[in-house]
Length: 470
Image (cartoon, rainbow, N blue to C red; front, top):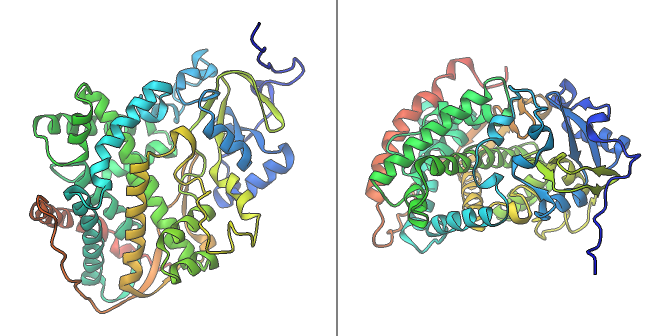
């Protein structure tokens, strides 16, 4: 019996490259991407052709279509080598987004290669996921300690009533400290490395050199930990897969650093913003002490990754109202897809205390964040958000929400600053909880002091410029 023939695009359906496309990244998109998504959907339906820095791309807007792309790995591939335009030499040599996609790491692998890489990550991350293990206890204690000490530094520098940028003076240094601790860095990674990760994701003209610098830094870290293993993610990845070369491990650390510093950091800031701007469902969850639900609701309203990594069609396929041809590129838009969920209005998805885990903040399908990584990411976000509202008795934005400056790129829509006026509670020191046997808390304390000293300049160096919105 002959196998059932696979469908092919009808001869009359126009290919992506022949369609007139409007550029996505415009001043209108910078100001209000939601309005752009709505307009594209009214004109084209759930899948729209757009121009992305001069390259045509299918932008997937509907929740049903986005989840279909994310969950069907056999049809929608992550390996950039499936991209027909790239294979045929049709991409500009200096196309800014290509540098990140050329980094061969777990995010851009398929099938067994991808599953093997996920097993390595899961094995290496598992000790940190378990709160009963020495590594897990210490990481949790470190996140809370770092958050408390950054708030204490803010109080020492600016007083118990004052102004702060919760991006530069809290979230970014907190994630940098957690990365340094988790990865086992002998010295702080440095603000410039975090900026390089931003440059790569934003797709600017210096994306390629920024990617190269970041990869080189993580490759050096891999070599350092191979020679001097410790109780850290880098060493545990080598333990899980001793055949990893320094270059391979450097690429995986690079990917993890992107998610930990930029994506998780955006989730922290977006959650704080939704509380401060008065999102009723987010505030209701926070008031009920449901920090996990607070984060879920904020991610639904404002996902940390607006448009997720490209997928490439393995064969001709009907998606929404269009035919996508084999080798075409699609960009699943979490931000647009979430509008379908929000449109449910007062249904259980949005209006009740039932979880809103249908958000795509951690992805979906075979390439969603590994379970251990999701647990750790959620821990960091809930701790970072919770400690702010533990310490602050009052906080309000010093700019109207529609005047906040955003990094509006092809992937991430993240705040550049989150300026607030705050009033801080009287300082209190919680009762110390003894660590499980075998933790290295004393070493972490020494590292914390060194990091705080190095970060003080980054946090308060721009203080004279003001963040009060005046």
